[in-house]
Length: 120
Ligand code: AMP
Ligand code: ZN
Image 1 (cartoon, rainbow, N blue to C red):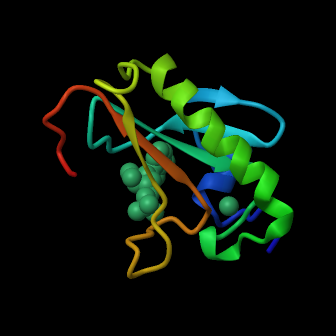
Image 2: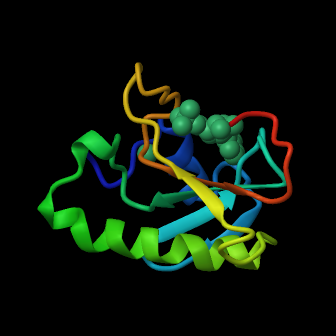
């Protein structure tokens, strides 16, 4: 596992080599709109460090993952999801081929807004 992988699409987004519509950024985390949204709100949160999947997360990443999860509802509100409980949002982490993971850089999907959605 490396800090940045030039063949990884999300590492290239983090590095600014591939453009994205940014939702949030800090030292460790980037959030940007999904290019094929399933719902009125659909953005991805990624660690800036290349981590291939949730299956690669160890105790040393617990604080980072905790911060990402804590941030998700705040960014969902910022992006237009209505508040809990009538509003809310879905958080999805596809992991591995059978888990439906297509991009092998850990990412959290945050999905919400008025239904119907294209998926889910
Ligand atoms: P997953 O199936 O969980 O690996 O989801 C990967 C997601 O990344 C999909 O929802 C794609 O639409 C999204 N995606 C792929 N390339 C880009 C990109 N360049 N910018 C934003 N989202 C992307
Ligand atoms: Zn990467």
